[in-house]
Length: 393
Image (tube, rainbow, N blue to C red; front, side):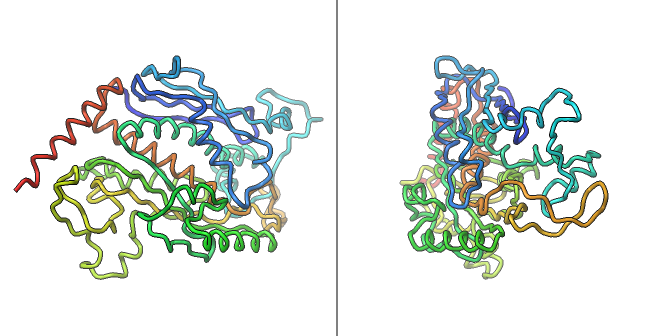
């Protein structure tokens, strides 16, 4: 069995994004239409910037799939950047003359990757940093995550997401287990009820009027994960640690919570632990009567829904720029402005789903891995069957 991994390459205004996913077993149905459907969800969202009017993301499968079925070899995809037509000289891979507008950036944007990146890589043109640091790269992750999601579906794992806060507006009135996910998909702000939808939009409108940006919190949930993904035996095998790592890698994310982790700190232990009772109707032969742990205990999935809350800060680029400096001269200037969203919480949700899918797919293949989908499904069925010997008093 090949180790599961993925790679992305490409710049925001370059020709496009390249994606390679390795470790997908043979026999999985994979179509460009399925991937495109997931990618289109990343492009929706109230408060999105102008680029979403230009791009219509689609991943072209280039290898690893034949007649709609995975071969077990690396899957390669190409995502065209349609905006590259306006940047052919500025983002040319070949040398260009001094008469060409190279769209050089030297004004630092506070809160962006350009300052540490410029000093780390000794770049006097901030574009050499911000092009790769751009959230445009997440389109490639959603494409990779779509293939991981397709694999997880084969063993009954589904993944959803919603916005639970925008600015100081909280939208958690509907409990995770009661969410109508069709309502969420129909909301431009991915709210789970009409009241939160209206309040989130009003907060975004206020930020736009004030020429600033706004962040929030989104929730990603995986249903149907079996007991035992991840492990307690070493720090880098713990599933919650790996999920936190994945979510923190998303642009502008500054906080990750598993289950009700932060609220748990304000409660006594007897109100936090998920009490277990026997249940012959549950495949595990047991069930927890609550899910404060967010489906993970001791670094392992416990069979409950896996719930991750992700805090994402306001985007650094604003129409009313902050005071800053020129990276080359040290001159006091206004920060550079580049086209961006007012609020990216809703658009980050599908990215969070992709990172959840990629992380769970890796853990699932470690646990049930094989070279073909049929082999994996046999391994999974045998494992679930083994639980029947527990709890039979």
